[in-house]
Structure formats: structure tokens, C-alpha cells
Image (tube, helix red, strand yellow):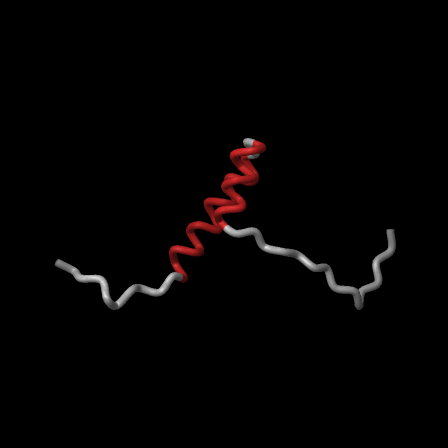
Length: 55
């Protein structure tokens, strides 16, 4: 299959919740690993809530 190099491939990233639901439905190890990766990345990028008390 020849692909025109000027064409762009559109990909949609699934949310953590969607990946988990897909894993529950399929039991796919690949989906579970994607879920773990996405969840870890989400935790690293979430801003801290400055209103949380540290008591």
C-alpha cells in the first residue's frame, strides 16, 4: 500500500478510564500496560492543590 507522505495519520489518545474499561472487557495485557503508562504520566503532570492542608 502506497501512502502519500503529505497525509497525516490521526490518532486519538484514550483516557485512563477508557483504557481501564477496555482492559476489563478484553483482558488484554497490552491495554493494561497502556493503562499503567497513562496513569503514571497523568500522576506526574497533575498540579498540586495548594489548598490541601498538611496537618
